[in-house]
Image 1 (cartoon, rainbow, N blue to C red):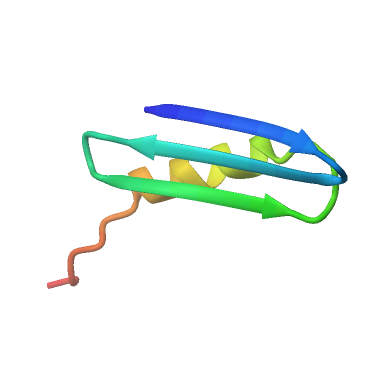
Image 2 (image 1 turned 180 degrees about the vertical axis):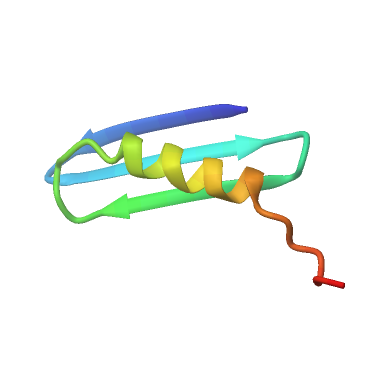
Length: 55
């Protein structure tokens, strides 16, 4: 997994990509606060959920 974050001019962003599953998460915020934990939690949920229909 690769990720990048940043803050500028009162805004913040977080991006995470998982090349193994071809999935990703983007968090954009109109506040200059750290959103890394939110992005990591969303990525963890995405990686651990089964998207196959239940049988």
